[in-house]
Length: 473
Ligand SMILES: *Cc1c(COP(=O)(O)O)cnc(C)c1O
Image 1 (cartoon, rainbow, N blue to C red):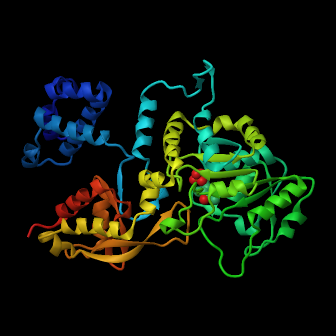
Image 2 (image 1 turned 180 degrees about the vertical axis):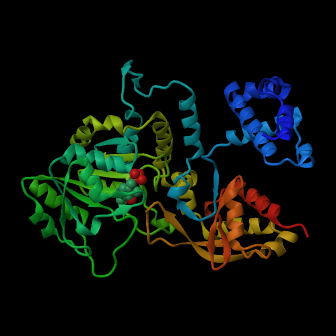
């Protein structure tokens, strides 16, 4: 090592000395001694490497090695380590149930209930009336029964788990008949044939990609058949020369041969959303009323609640699923129960649900209300920002997302930016890499904000982010 290096390395304060610094002491309180010590060593190491990189004493003299400056470096490091990796995102994509962005937002009442239950003990598995052990499912089962008309209900970790558990409990080592038109894959490697194999059930494909007839099911049933499974093709549509067997007819076939009929409904809406401009989607109560034995659906898609898989149906089958040992591995936690119970309360009145549940509220939002929001954002881009972004309002469509209602094109108004000082890709990167993160869309060399999925309080935040990027002229 060069003599000059030894000289400058010696000038660096020792770890102990830094730890005794007043400010550093206060950070130890805040961040823990271990965290601060690790950062002190890290920062000193960076200094050492900078020193070793040069023998130019002018450069070395310019390196600020006083205790206060070093302490500031440590603080920057500590603060950036404190930042959460999982963070809030402003969703300006217009995709309401955006799986990559966390699907449904909870209603504020659901958040409050979740918070209360998280911070205190609760009667999660305690029956207050009888003063003895109770069931975590009891808190939502009555509401689910009332809202769907089913005899019984159960909630598990997510809908993939619900399907898996039901197959395992009711059809392991036996055959499950599925139409070839319904052997779906949804995002995140949920493929019906794979789920089936994993659960131990034996897939019996019938029909063709575009057409499956009642006789296909009837002919496939034998003494090994445990179930007829219908999978709602929620994330795509086969159009043209097609037919699938309607649920009531499938129920008849199942009953005639004494096999379970189950429908994986995927999104599962509790209310008919057609009056609000959405396409027809079978509701859970309708599916239950068709006489099907079991229905499964997600808690955080059209329902607008927490991640969960909900099973409703005939009591005997729900009981068998509940009692299966695997249910213990897939069970919901208290946060889910708390948020789901609060979400379900809104459904006693559909209007009320649409007003209070963010997912439904955004889906049913009138285009003129979205246009009003887009205008609010545009008005905030005045003066230099106006020249920098050249904002305009354009017609567009929002998507439901979450594999729900794939054909739905919800009319919306977009705020389109054509940045004059940087590329659209640069702007996209800037908005994605700052805090709060803002995600929008790019189309035809414009950056698009769909305000359907932006909360009112987020509009000024977007404006600020855009203004901060305008180059000083
Ligand atoms: C979304 C979906 C699932 C998976 O639901 P998760 O709650 O995400 O586990 C299963 N089946 C269908 C048809 C779906 O649309």
